[in-house]
Length: 220
Ligand SMILES: Cc1cc2nc3c(=O)[nH]c(=O)nc-3n(C[C@H](O)[C@H](O)[C@H](O)COP(=O)(O)O)c2cc1C
Image (tube, rainbow, N blue to C red; front, side, top):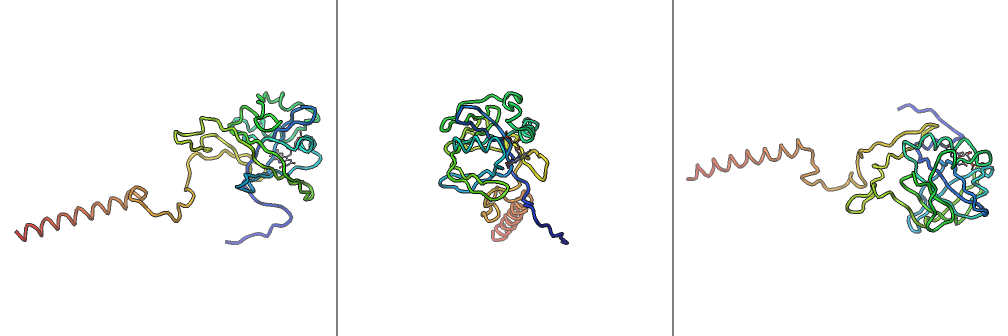
């Protein structure tokens, strides 16, 4: 495999793309699009978002130290893009996009009803990095659309029609998994073995049984 050397940019792709809602001290709501986000800790549950200081959302989040991450669906792709190319300084994006805002449970920021997953966060620290400041935040609670949960309480994000972002473009996520955590080392059960292998084994058994029957006949 021959490769080109690339320098000066983070080529980490694909990444999530999310809608971040926040409020300022005057109770005004705003929403903006964020792709530089990620999980950073399991216990306490923490995530990060990187924000340029010139964003209106930067001001709002710094004032209240709270925000909510809303996961957009394929149907909200246009809205997701719009909220990332227009500032709340110039337009009321929430009104323009017709989002239904719901009152937060643990934080002052409202969440978007149309998004199937909403994650309420409180900022723990802000690290200036250069163009962006990194906001490290604790997840206080999440709202999950009950249609994404099966009878055992397992969340199926793949049922949510969520989207990803890669090098300037939005992509839908596939519904069918190609593997699961730990499957590479898991012991194979009869059911998980490829059908052809299972068939061959049962065929072998039948041959063995036939031979045994023959043997038994001979003994007689
Ligand atoms: C796909 C996409 C991803 C973006 N990711 C980020 C990001 O991670 N951090 C950021 O500061 N701005 C990001 N932006 C830009 C802001 O969303 C944009 O400047 C927005 O208009 C700011 O809104 P506000 O001024 O109302 O806060 C992104 C824009 C798009 C379209």
